[in-house]
Structures are given as structure tokens and as C-alpha cells.
Image (cartoon, rainbow, N blue to C red; front, top):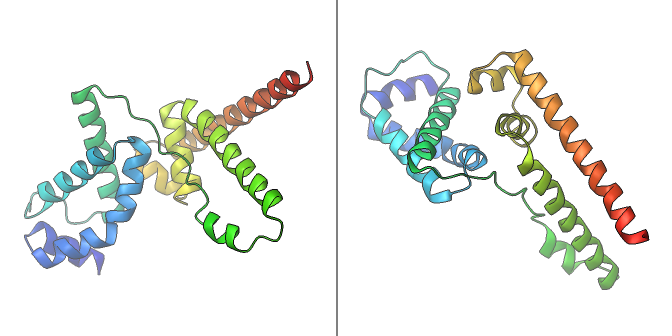
Length: 193
């Protein structure tokens, strides 16, 4: 089904264009933001990608459409970053979407608000250390834990071996843990000295 839409899309079907765009836009945008934090740049790259692929029969027909689009978007964003010499940062970890709902059903407003504030502060701290990771480690962690891709899928998207994906993930998690542990020790020393 997707392959048929893909073939129609690269052969110029505007209906297939809309269907594929609607099917993948959210995932492409989310992935694009993980590579570069500038939303406008990411949307421009997505639009340029679809326009360049549309009605272009030279594009391969027998591809995994999702991985093809993700990998193509990644190359396009990296190229645009190099052209503009902008340094992008990974999106912030999403804050709790249910905060307003949590505030509406609290029994003890003060303790619940403090708990929510503590959770948000913890997310900011994790995000800070997450942003300090090398870009490829951040990308693997994002694809693995935020997007839910398997190591095989990540290897296809990034163009590296599965073992490299596992190594990058392991090293990223290890570095994140070490930084958080060091930060926790610093806070203890700061408050008790």
C-alpha cells in the first residue's frame, strides 16, 4: 500500500503527495527537531524534501519509504546547517502534557505543585546533560528511546552498523548517568558545606 503510494508520488500524483505528507509529517518533524532545534529550518527542509522527490521518477521505487524519508531529511538538515553555519540543539525533553490535568485533581495543592515543579526541574537537568552528549549519541538515544526504533531501524536511518548503534547508545547512557551522578554529588556538597 505504502509502496504503491510512493510510486504514484514520485511519478507526480498530487493525491499520493498529500497522503504521504500527511502520513509522515509528524514523524519527520519530530525527528528533524532532534537534529536541529530550529523549527522553521526543519519545516523548510521537509517541504523541500517533498518537493524535490515529487514527480521525480529517477528516485528508487523499491525502498522502505519511512527510512528513506528520515535519512534524506537528516542529510538535508545537516547540509543546511553547514551552509548556514548554525549550531542547533536537540529539542528539550517534552514537559508533562498532563500538568493542567494534574493541577485540577490535586488534593493537597502545595505538595502537588512542589512535586510537579521538582519533576520539571529534574527534566530540565536531564535535558541539559542530554544536550552535552556528542551528536551521534544523542541521535541514537533519541531514535531508540523517544521514537521507539529498533537497532536495525536506527542502523538503516543513520547508515551505520547495528553494533555501532548499540555502542553509541551504551556510551551515551553511561555518560548521561555519570554526569547526573556527578551533578547529584555536587548538589549534596553544595547544600551541606
